[in-house]
Length: 197
Image 1 (tube, rainbow, N blue to C red):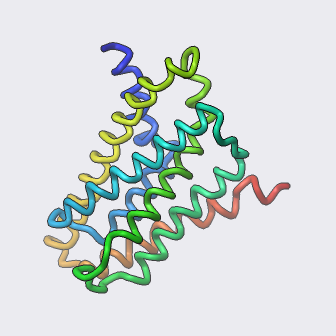
Image 2: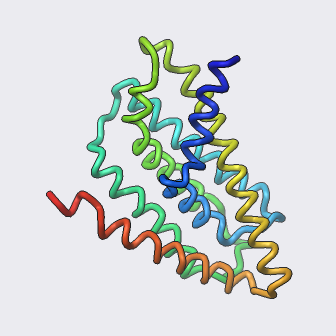
């Protein structure tokens, strides 16, 4: 049980680490158009992101895929930028007829990219042979999911407060938050190591 808490806490801290805010930034970008009433969509998207993250760790830990760290570190802010720009241009548009399929597939793919960003570190903390790696990986994934639920709840509560008490429209909230995220992500892309090749 203590081993479960060890990997659970690593997953929790991976998302909630203030110095590695890219994960939280992506979740904020993803949640911008949603409210508590959209809880099924929110749960699906967050779980798909975790699934993608876990799949990436699996294929990396078992040596199926090896990707250069600098490339992944460049792709992560791109996933955040794409998500924020998408919500910037779709802000205020009715999502009642909108299929979640496109956003779900993109979220799963972006989860894979984010997972690859953590895979090198994760490989160094995993014990022993291949069969010993599966359970810690799943425990880590549970920690990731718990942290993501915390972040999503905070974003949804903040969204509710801003829209209810400060009379922001849903569209204005999406526009302001998407623009803020774009403003934070652009310097990450400009300062990326990939440009120093």
